[in-house]
Amino acid sequence: MRPIGVSAAVVCWHCSQPLDPGAGDPTARYLYRGDQPRTVVVEDWLHCACGAYQNVRRLNEISVEALGNS
Ligand SMILES: [Zn+2]
Picture 1: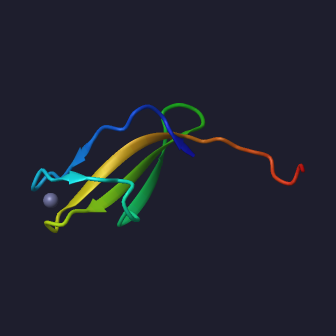
Picture 2 (picture 1 turned 60 degrees about the horizontal axis):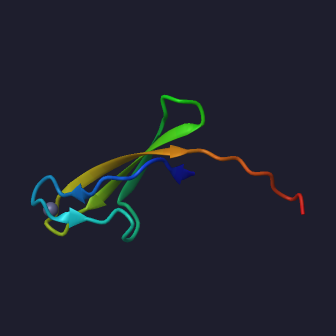
């Protein structure tokens, strides 16, 4: 999967502190079918230092690559 478009900055809903979705593993991740073929919405839940949880949704494109054709 690869993200589509530019992801907006993420701030905590509770304390407005910026959160980095790329830092560490998300607390939880959910996948939803996208509204276009071969797309998926990835929803990550990030844990802020203040104790709150913030969800981030990003649209991803699914790419299928052949394996074992070397
Ligand atoms: Zn916070």
